[in-house]
Image 1 (spheres, rainbow, N blue to C red):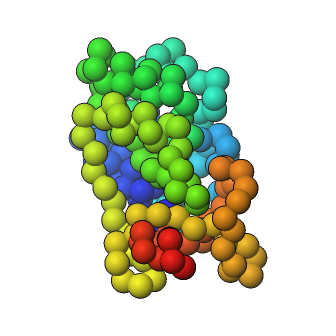
Image 2: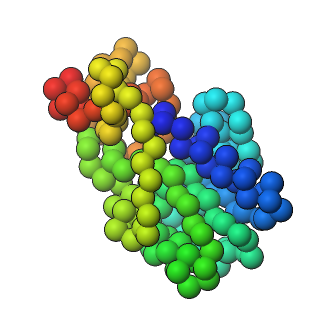
Image 3: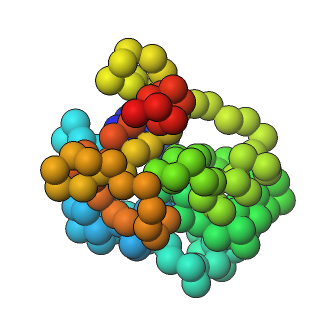
Length: 173
């Protein structure tokens, strides 16, 4: 969270398109923080894109493109991860997914677990905890900034709802 995933995705899209190549971008329909179908960086860049939900079949939606880019990939289903893996392996189209590994309880998102299992390559985008160490976890907070430890896995929010943390602060803080 807050590590620049959407910024990186938008940069990759720009790099492909600057070379005259077509890319297909997706984001989760559930993420409506900046409007449905918007990939938005906290730094400012924003782009309209296609959305996916639990019923999206990526094998049916894959037009001839040079690359498929997926934001909020933690919301993919197991089946969708397998479909995207097939797009990459069988059709030879690079698929680059950006998302969180785990939720505010430290539990993996199902989509993330399967992405980690099937990915040919994993690149971590780093962020910093308030203590200065590398942040690898997320903490959900209420309106007063108090930690929430129970609840639904998915609750869309930004800096007002979540904080990034290192493992030590996640367990002790």
